[in-house]
Amino acid sequence: MKNQPLKPGWRRVKFGDVVRLSKARSQDPLTDGFDRYVGLEHLEPGDLRIRSWGNVADGVTFTSVFQPGQVLFGKRRAYQRKVAVADFSGVCSGDIYVLETKDEQVLLPELLPFICQTDAFFDHAVGTSAGSLSPRTNWVSLADFEFSLPPIEEQHRLIRLLLNAEVARSAADEAATHAEKLRKSLLFETFDALQVDDTVRIPFLATEVDCRWVKARDAGEILMGRQLSPKYKTGKNTRKYLRVANVFDGFIDTSDVNEMDFNEREFAAFKLQSGDVLLNEGQSRELVGRSAIFRDSVPDCCFQNTLIRFRPNAEVMSEYAHYYFQYCQYTSRFVQISKQTTSIAHLGVQRFAEMNFPLLSIDAQKAIVDALSAVVAVIPQLKKRAQTASTIRNQVLMAGASR
Image (tube, rainbow, N blue to C red; front, side, top):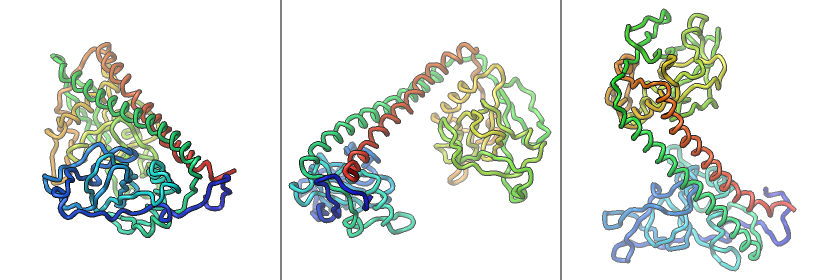
């Protein structure tokens, strides 16, 4: 904070007073000895390392030169928080600023990337960005950013702390990535290997409230949600409902839940129960059929017709059904049976009902669920560790802003 007292030796400085924007250029990178280029797509949010790049020999129009130790900052869509430290030389996109310290006796180069990762820096960059579709910040605005700069001796100490935190963050992040790969690999191997004679059709539960059934041996009930219409926005008999924007891969986001009218008869038909599996009915090809399990996170909640509700019977575990639906999504099985427009694939309850469902014994289902759930449970824990390590840089660099 600008008005907070500083610790002895700390001082307020402007970014442009201690940081320089490199203007080195190469009109012919290959001839000048640069064989790698970096675009915004090669910078990962929150990761200070550059882990991928392109080959200049494949053709590129980039001319901005960077050298090892310089900081690359994505000025376009700064909210993506893309900052990295170069460990090789190359050329980069014009949407990337190449930054370096003006005087190493004033600001150590190793501290610069951590300053560029603070919330205050990103808030300033986003707040000074212009443009609607691809907002960009500019150097004049960035140069005006003010922050608390510790003395050199303190910078050395802080860098050691920050580097240790970065090692911990990177390790946790990589572990989470490997756990996610293990989850998908286990999912594929499990359902690819199933040789099940006992498959059942998933029955179609009609969208009319009279709940007509298609006669078939069933794994559970299917129902399409209530259509959204202005006539259901009168404010009478208002109920909360979930829509496609609430259902993600494996979890339901309830931070933004809308409301519309459901009379008592409709409410009885469309009310969600704990254990219901919700699938995105209409989405892009990659996301159609994306599913999650409802766990009473919103009391007395219904659902819209952008979602399909699968309510398993006593022979089917919700988690088992959800994992199978994930398998169908990842292997494009939902895409194969969907009706597709230019940009949207519609799964549809009738097409969904025609799928065969691998019905295993409850014990076999539980074994699959336990194995997959053990891996799934680890991923958020690892991500939380990575996030905890990330917050340390703000705490460390803000430490001088108070006595």
